Image (cartoon, rainbow, N blue to C red; front, side, top):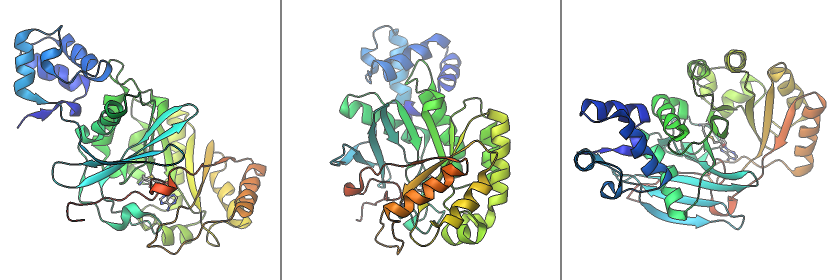
Length: 342
Ligand code: SAH
């Protein structure tokens, strides 16, 4: 079987080529062809020698993920359903912002974290996505629409820190200057709080952004909403975030879904601001997107504003996340995996 070239970092490709008696700089040329000139036919990579083209042809494939469906929301958000080789399918969401085009990438087939508000966790994880499947989400969308993705958020289905090595390798590929060149500050990884991986992430040479799905201001509440909190309670998460901040000096985003009557009172806002004090935190308040299978309700606007005001009054920087793509089930927490049988 040929190896999918989308799974290769520049360094890995250089090593492979040198082992096969080609030159290190050939890897750079190939990267530029694939990612910058969007040429996926080895034969047409005109500055490569014939022996090298033959070697590439024999060794590598450049298969993109095939699209099953593409839906566009009235607000321009587009959701893609991609087919994987083993019959599963995954969802990827493209969002238009005033600062550019942002792609929300899926990291696993299903998710085993079991958050009680998220459709992605309704089916347990079947497997991790390969590096090539992560990269292909970006390249497929770029090729299909003839666009340039400027921002990537690993916030689709799955827990990226439960597929840590592949997600980091993915970041190395898309960050590469000779390739997609997506800047480290334009890449964000969101986690439900796998503490040992937060420490590991703090040491990564590529300083992509960290977002923590917090959603609660105390352990009782968080454990009810997110079972992972039993394993990694708030105190440990906050401690890891402190170390991350000391190490990287990067502001951390804390995501907080407002759930009516559950975590949205003024007392909760006070508790949350105490919890985050001194952290250079940024709170992203998220309107709850309805998922049929769950009984949570969305906080109404006036209460959400009161929560926001209270946080900012107590010195916590906060924003309200804009809802995008709810009409096509493409919003946060609405992505699902599907199988051939459905
Ligand atoms: N597993 C990672 C990556 C998924 S990110 C994580 O937990 O961070 C998806 C984001 O959408 C998370 O912040 C998640 O908590 C949020 N989310 C999940 N269900 C939602 C819903 N129904 N409404 C709004 N946001 C939701």
